[in-house]
Length: 99
Length: 507
Image 1: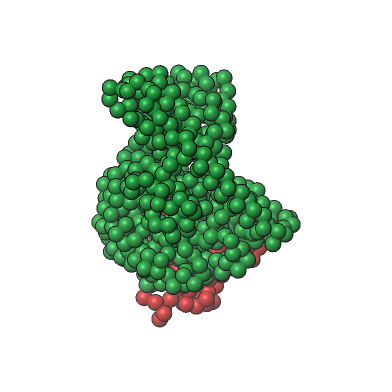
Image 2: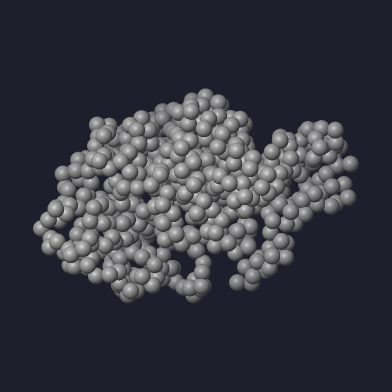
């Protein structure tokens, strides 16, 4: 039972101090031009069970789709934080890239 | 007798001239260049060399922001937390996140290389007070190592009440709170969520908590004598009419300056407003609202909505010169740098004082002119300046123009127009449009442009657009030159004619 942070994390540090299990960390370095992002130590993560009614990292994270539950489902699905309907975002980005 | 007052009203913070405001108590009144002349002496003394608080000071002094605060505790519809772009110039955008140690190093390096620097601000890229450890440790180190640098912070206000006492301890005497509304129903259209006491709270409920915290924090700061500026983003159709109410409320709680800024919204930024097609205000809408609020409140009109890692004078960004790898290679004598700053600041003050005296002597009488049958109309003029309060920039080098309004009574600064940093879009903005024609379009509504020099091609295109290019006042103080051009227009009878049709159409 653990969450994970995937690529797309912008390293805003918001989640790290909130974690009651100190499971969130920023790995050092980075190779091949890939910038490291925050990760969750699966051995430490409790999904905030017993500490908070809601998982803290997922409650402050500003980026949709980058924190997954144990089943790989995003806790903040597309559109849930920005209020931008995903199809609208897709259309706008497609239009911009076509310019 | 008609008098064209070039100068003579109180300057912000000028020792010895306090109280010389000459009967002009209203903030909306166009004191020569500052809307702060009605403020108490102790406040003017605090802001007289602060480029973000004093319009007059921003011609002379530089500031910098250090990007130490990445986390945020709310989401605003005009912000995209993913953004990280060196070519964008707007709040919330940075190229390089710094640790507090790196930030201190950078501040000391910049202050040694740009001795006009007076101010260090922490403004993001997230909310500085949502990163209290990083923000406060930066302030703590700087108040010890660069005690001559003023420290300021800007915040959305959510965490403000919890840190007011700590801010006081670190000698932070300028705080900016972004307050876009005092009505939760309007807030719900601006803030999709806040993070509060361990939960994400969406919609009206979240906005209500944010508003309550902002107002509480504002009162706590002003009770402790800390200067508070309020920033508001003007969002047409969302809070435009409401901002007059915001201005009244924050003034009543003791804020000393209100900065109404235009919404920046483009689809390419990936913000809610950008993607959903919310438009920003026109120059006219922004100015009308600033004028409407000015009856209640001192208004700031020279804000450049700079990046959270901006460096230099307000109109410029020299961040590229001070990346961490370049700073590591610099050898700096910190004690010597602080002495040099003191000398440079003293020289700037001596120049300002000299300019003030000279202008006080040169109140120009228009009595020799034929009295117009009616009040001559006001005229907008654009000015190219590289700082120092002078017309000292080549037209083609200007990345922004300052806009002044001249009337028979005075010359007042009303804002600036950026020419190449971002494009406001719109139907007339195609890719084929050249940079020059974009520049000229950005000057719509202006009847003259004053610069140090100007090339042949822009000269012709400006004239075609009905804007008179003028290079005759190179190296002269801005307000005096604008007044002189206005006087020439009056003498030529140009002010009795209506605004040229070409300008009206495009304005």
